[in-house]
Length: 186
Image (tube, rainbow, N blue to C red):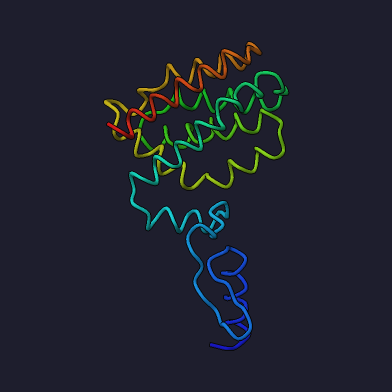
């Protein structure tokens, strides 16, 4: 391995918070609390080594903090374009015939809610958690009696957003995430 490749690898690991390098001390692995888990690569790597149930609950906690509020914002701020994308994702959920189709549509639904909220600081969050969220959605779909068991809850979120009822959208998303939490814990 060349020095250039090594330096670039160390620079990448440093930017992700995994290592720290100081003169006369050397390069050391940093404590997990210093890692930048909001880096898409690092989040993906960490999800592969973390205890699956603990990681799923941490991701769920994050979703419960963000998604109900985002659904309320989406009800207030959606455009014709973002509502069409949300409607298309919902229609794909309705039409899904197997777990793979459902998971793709479900993921697109949640990403569309974040996009429809029109908050440029929340939108990238969807892209950040996309890979780990997809794995969680797949697991939840497989744990349910039928893969589309939460269609009614998704429909309630969609209808509240479309009606521009922010309070109902927040409540519907919180209810949907409560169902998800029940499957994770069950």
